Image 1: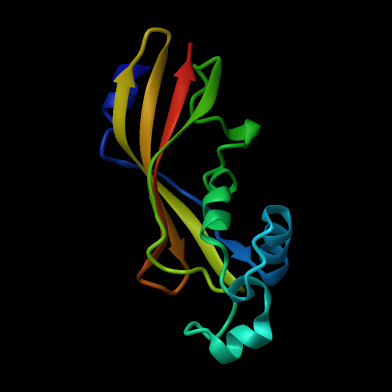
Image 2: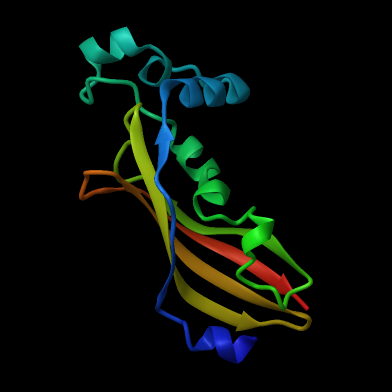
Length: 150
């Protein structure tokens, strides 16, 4: 498995489907996290006062969508069937270079950038980029760390 993954280092390994981040999604996230700042939850005020002229998704909402956007939770399409289990081990770096405006569609692209053999596992580092449809700028770039156990 390690040798197979090693051959893919530096390659784009995944391109996801587009997902719409609507105001209801943003409001639900605001409710769960308690972050009800007007730039996220008040479309009328945002239209008048925000430089984006609309509400925007929380950066942490964009980050929280990573499992959905990368199909990491799809049991029917496991990219690592040889592993007994995979564990989200964390993040090395996260940036939010451009906001996701309410009503935008986003998708993820992943590139394998690191691979470390462990005692009973392999640690993978993926650079995940969240694109905003019809924008040249990325909404999020994160290095995710995954451990595959055998």
